[in-house]
Length: 204
Ligand SMILES: Nc1ncnc2c1ncn2[C@@H]1O[C@H](COP(=O)(O)OP(=O)(O)O)[C@@H](O)[C@H]1O
Ligand SMILES: [Mg+2]
Image 1 (cartoon, rainbow, N blue to C red):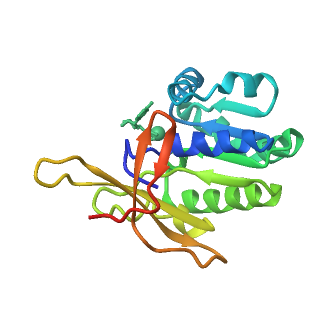
Image 2: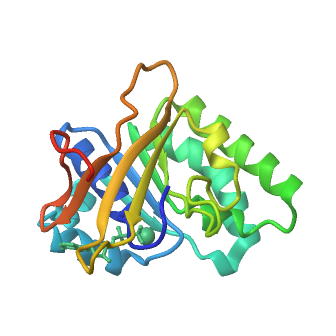
């Protein structure tokens, strides 16, 4: 999760690209940007995803938030079957915040997200959900839901620039079930090759 421009879509795309390199079929579901925009983003990082789409290593889908009811029904009924038949090992959903906006109230939102996560888990694929953060609490997702259901939470933050300097992007792991992970805050950059975490460096 992270605010706009912190690289969530890039992170999700990069997760797909790494999967494709390992010969793992991947599915990217976008509720925000359309297919053309995603393909262009990928190309700007030197990732030729068109080839992966043609060879059925990557499934790229755009769901229309305006078509809320159909979208939710389709995700629930068709997605698990599709993930299995596609043999997907990795799934990315960009963003769960937009998906959540399709529900009228909190109870419905919670029930649907929990069910969706269960369905996704049952497929055996590793799923990456991107989420916007709350303006007033940038360590919590906008709906405050996904971080509870997810096995892991990675927070991308853009810190205020000091002394007129450059804004620093930082990444930290807030949660990773069954893993003794680091809690250090690490700087990262979005480069022409995608996200690069400067694991050896510390934040000033
Ligand atoms: N090819 C690139 N090279 C360097 N930085 C890039 C490139 N493409 C995008 N960026 C940076 O990444 C940001 C967008 O990242 P994105 O993944 O779309 O963020 P989010 O999904 O969190 O809004 C851009 O605003 C820009 O700062
Ligand atoms: Mg995005």
